[in-house]
Length: 164
Image (cartoon, rainbow, N blue to C red; front, side, top):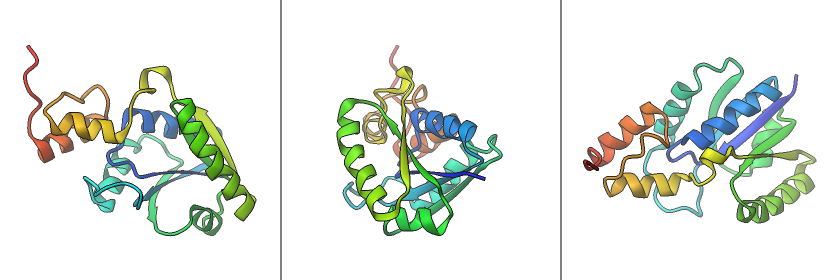
């Protein structure tokens, strides 16, 4: 059985993330969604446990998914969990430049290959950081995140401003 690893900070999970996870689940027997604390990103909006919980709820319809979080090297986590592949979503060429270097380093360290899935066009502009910023300033992000996540963002930041 082939296991894939979908890593990310998921702070918060967007419809773009969910699209990549669902598509990965169609091609692999088992998928581990690995929630990481990215030391290169500023303070997290949601705790690791909150992100794990939200991901668990929005992927509950997928029977071959499990949600984990970890510290350390991605390849060590992948190897320890029997992952045959790492799967990453790409939104733009700028993502590819960075992710290619990561994929090559991960392959060199572990022999584990990275598969890239292009993000569906309707989600290509989405990023967790943009969603957080829009929500923080009262924008409506309900078309960018699952309903549960929109609810959590409203609880954190307050109701979106009336756009009428």
